[in-house]
Image 1: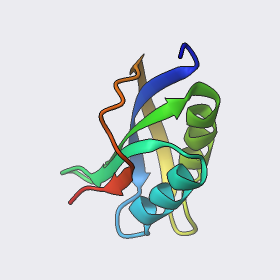
Image 2: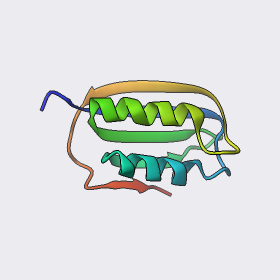
Image 3: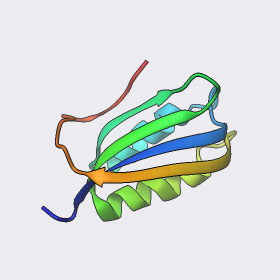
Length: 93
């Protein structure tokens, strides 16, 4: 169980209106992660993901690039303990 973790990532830059949430949803599901992605007021995107630490790090690498059209300026990440409270990865509106 020690390989499971939770990460909260706030993505800044040109990340809304470029299919960033859909990009994140597809990558997270491919990696077998759970959690959610949503747009924040002010133009940032929040990602909360849970699962294997290595796969969470892989997701973070994808978030640094983003989909075509995105311009990621910076990421703020915060790690915490795995909760298991998300049945799947979804987009929140």
